[in-house]
Length: 109
Image 1 (tube, helix red, strand yellow):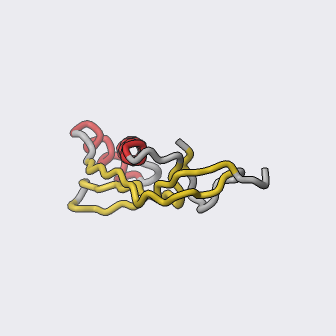
Image 2 (cartoon, rainbow, N blue to C red; image 1 turned 45 degrees about the vertical axis):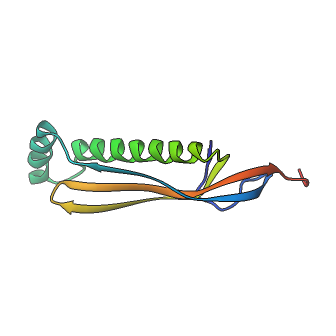
């Protein structure tokens, strides 16, 4: 599956637009991550425990988005973006979204 933040795929033309696809994940740190992250907040700097939660949430949302596109038999996702919303302290929704498309090889290649 080709995924790009751009709206073109070099060597291909968009044959058809299948619609918006998305993957949504709601995450919070586990008890150990929350405690360690809280302690690190006191001293400032990068909080690796929270980075791990964020990376896992983005990765999972991305994979769900890919599955959604595959269910539509898409060749690619263009205009891919991430968004995040905090529901409550330490509870965050991560959304990966883009436009699922079918591609054909460009005649100019």
